[in-house]
Amino acid sequence: MAELTRREVEALVAATDGGNVNLACRDLAGLVFRGIDLRGANLTGANLTGADLEGVDLSTNRQTETSGVCVRSVLAGANLRDANLSRVNFAGANLEGADLEGADLEDANLSFEGDDHVVLRKANLRRAKLSGANLTGADLSGADLTGADLTNASLYRAVLDGATGYPS
Image (tube, rainbow, N blue to C red):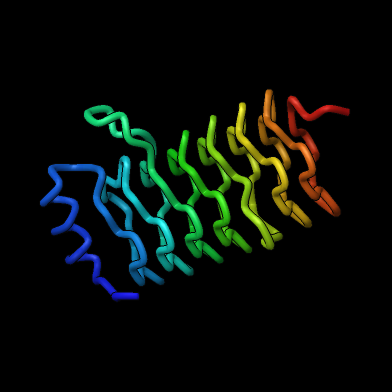
């Protein structure tokens, strides 16, 4: 993995004219991404351990209709609070201990594996694909799970207080 600085990431984003930047397999651990436009970014296999992505927009780039991709990315302990992650693909990503409080994950693919204790408090998970996800010990309090696919998801010790749309 090639390690990048925030300045190098900003230069790559600028070179793509705002969106669809390719950061696949990059070491981005601990970087602060606030204020960087990552709509449609490819973060496949990237190491974002402990990165600060609070409020970041990884949703669909309206110009290209490309959604962000975080397949097999490491986001352990990352701050994704209030981020726009609608339609982002997190298949196989490591989200252990990640904070996604208040994040918009509508129509996102969250079929991640082997992770637990993710914070999804007050997150918008409408129509999100959580099939097979390990949500052991996850905090889903106040989350909107309307239409979410929870087939074979592990919800052992998950907190669902105030969650809506969850089948009882």
